[in-house]
Image 1 (cartoon, rainbow, N blue to C red):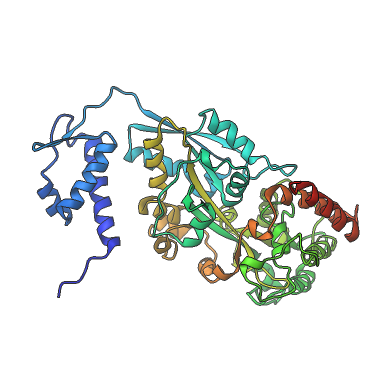
Image 2 (cartoon, helix red, strand yellow):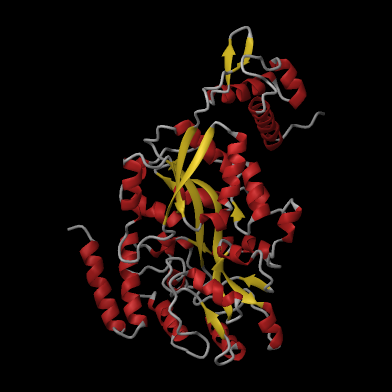
Length: 475
């Protein structure tokens, strides 16, 4: 009995045919005005059915590369002078490091030589003072200044809360991706952002420091109490500190609240709620205070960004940091001997999931070219390059869970437990699991900053946050 060909194998052959024909047209192997081989010949060459071949040729026709002439064949289109379609992509300034975006864009433009991608950069995180990402996004999208926008799941949440998802074009679901990277970009059954890469927040540590102290390396059993004890033993006054992290990052401080719960077996849907009567999240706030006020293990250095933390770690000034696979790209060419483990926990294991994706402006005048770009970044070709060139985790499951394919990818300074992310899936949480709007999260952050600085006590913290929540509640 003939075995059934998997859908994955079929799709890869179809993708190969389209890519090969596209390259042959770009390289003038098939000159303008000439005809492609017959559908039957292409079917035999790429081991596809005639129906599948026609599907691929229709894609090339939509791209303007060929004209389908009934009962004659598929003629290569004449080039339109030297004019290119310009796709403007808005992205955080740090995206080059996290995704090697320049190299991906260069590869994309090699596949689609009639498209030029131009980038506009903006801050990686929303303003600490107010929820402002949606305002920035609106100004760009409504004025037609961006065709494609890179954003994370927290920023998409802000767009949903601002009733602004209508600015984005709905996108198709990709069954090859982890489901958990798509659902945070979905609203009312429609996905509006194409996921590209993801990362949990993890603990990153200097292995040499642990060997010097004769200490066992961190593992998933560690609590924050364990970290405090080990940090005290590994710290060397005026030389190095045991622990550090950029506390005010929107991807750091919420973790302590998400790990706080009266019921350690609570599900992801009943996470720490900052508005609960018992104020369970205070456990996390107290732990942060205990850590950051201990000047033996935690430096009093005022960071401006996560880059400051990475610099101290590379200099050997701190032994453990809260990090992400994205941030570890700072170490991929360094000589530091480091590894990773799950974050220590408080009442229960939990970590934040950060997902980067691309949305298409619904008002884009170059929508077809923009769709080609987003589709490319989710393709096996781009996802494999992402796996080979960075430490960021691709969203296509089969590629994320295999070793890098290139020699260059294997030469990067990768942590020994790089594949650990697969064991953390049950602990993944999102900002929205705080059950606060983005605006409320910003307000709580500013109050916690005052609490951790000793300006207000716990009672004042609770009272002021209760008043703030009342001001956010519609009358």
